[in-house]
Amino acid sequence: MSASPPRRRFLTAGLGSTLLLLGSGGGCRARYREPIRFATNPWPGYDPLYIARDKGYFDDAGLNVALVDLTSIGASRRAFERGQVDGCGATLVEILLAADQSGLRPQIAAVVDYSNGADALIAAGSVKNLAALRGRRVAIEPGTLHIQLLALALDSVQLTVRDVALVPMPQSAMPAAFADGLVDAAVCFPPESNRLLEKGGKVVFHSGQVPGEVVDTLVFDGAFVARRGNEVQAFVGAYYRAMGFMATNPDEAHAIMARRENMSIDELRQTIAGLRYVSREAQLELLSPGGPVEHSLSRLQGAMMALAQLRQSRTLKDFLIARELIAGAVVSA
Image (spheres, helix red, strand yellow):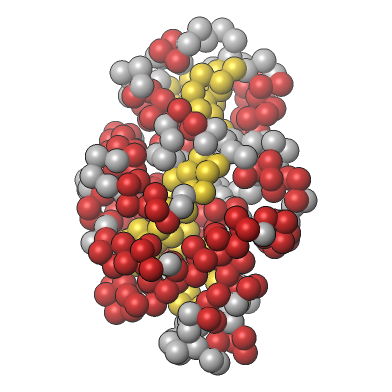
């Protein structure tokens, strides 16, 4: 895989002129006059929202939607926490941080995709296996889902993040650190993961081994859902309508997505190969008690609390107060 959008990286970005009013005439025909402000960052899982824009699905649903296109998932979370947007694209890391640091009640409106091999824990040749990482130096990028994948990997061999020496660094610095022997392993995704493999690394764990656990979601604040639940239903419905268009018109859909991601269609398709879109039928199963998302949230939260990144423990139910509303959106989409 030669390119991957920076969905997980914490960069700075201003809102400025990034509001894009969707629908014909800037939403003048919308039944709902007040816009839904939704922040996204470059990542194909969120691109059906842009297909919905270009194909007029938001307008058809009577929605006035303003997409706020930011450079990173961290910037999206900060806009959400500051009340600059009503919702955002988020991983479980951002959901937990937003709930812990801002006092918001993030509600999962939809799980849009899960990583299916794109994220990997890569170790040096001297590391015999995953269990041999005990006491070794592992590079992760702070404030990203790296900690989530690492926690899942270590849990599979009865280890925790306290059993390894975490070495924080930007993902872009990992290939050099790995080549220089400064770390014994690293959690990363393309293109850096490809570079580590070229330097003699080997995959000892990847996200395809925990299907449905490393997820990207559409999130709204609970207070917004309480006020404008019908619009959230329609928003999710438009997203899944766009997913249907992707299935029946892949060439046109991929062209829209590639423009949005600023990459070639071939690069886009390579990126998509490392993830799986979640169908509307699979939503409730993924979010069910004891399901993959709950399992992942538990492991992730334990790791983040062990590292003092969270102050309070929460359960998946805290983020699914609007479950019946979302179920209605999935059924009616």
